[in-house]
Length: 226
Length: 267
Image (cartoon, rainbow over all chains, first blue to last red; front, side, top):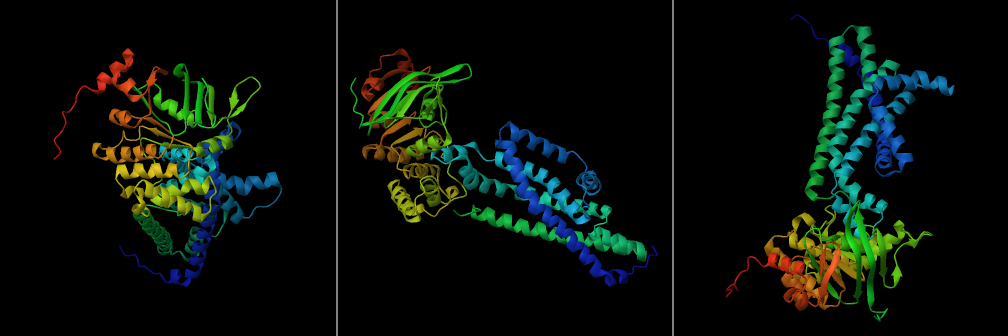
């Protein structure tokens, strides 16, 4: 094949690609920051709430899991402003969408993790007089979270990949920047290859880091000291 | 019968428990005096574990009264039924220690942290007091030297002794043992029974569900035999274990005695 590789356009615009990567990380990071606690709340509502909490939580989780992320993104960017009467910028719409969307998935991860803890742990804590909240906080969650780490990582990676959808509402994430550069330079192959490599490096680095953390926790047999 | 309020630790009156249509406990009456060691025997399904679990409300009784140190548990409603809020149950459980068949130590905490967890979280003791109790009760079960180990590093017998120390650290009025040695390898049963015997000798009030008849005979002040949710027979170990009156008790003892070893030569 006679294709002549020319990465000069990539080097010349690398700052733009880096900016895109930073924006991708910003959306992903904020979605995790809001999505994980919100997921925990949803999981607890679904597991331990009364009907008035359990059903809405269940509905929200199932709704968010059963609608395409891009439809959610369009709804928050194009439709919600009509309801609210205020403009929502692409960044806010992205963070909002992916915080909610990931919270539904994290809720299920939390639920699975909490339910995987042997009932004997609840009983032992109960038997020394611990309340349900204290048991959750000090006995169940510390053990559950440790078991959830692989699932968390998988969801976080999935999330970062899904955030590429934000380029459709003109938020300048890594993919959007790559699109822009590719279209103006016609160096499609080089630009998209570089963008893919950048995603790969970041995600691989995260995986290795979490793998290490998991190994360390597994070795010591603990995650929190009281 | 006249009972001295000061020495009566626990009183069950007409205790009932059913799961759906299944009546598991049928009108249990029991008075436990301070320092008494009571062993509860019975075939599988006779309700002995359920009875124990009702005492600290791991199972909420369907009827009857549970009186701990003269105080009845729960609040009485207008229609005579009772409600139990989390606070009063937590308070009750902090005064009733329980040891389970499957130890249930907290695997993410060291041995010492396991023992300190109740005093710290429930009784709100300060650090020095938590440390004092951990040391005292781990020493009592002979595991002071394992304070910094993880539960996974201990044998089953050691784990069960830590579970006993964890319950003792609450300084309870009464201890419940629910088949505490049933999950252990035979060679590890002795150390746990020895610890329980020592507690009995020190005057701890105990309700013990077990299949160890030799232990019951040696250590119990009173043996109860449960059958179909009722106390069928009770009395001194000699009376129930050696000269049983009821046919069900005799059958139970026959089943346990089918394979008996002649005195082994251990010299």
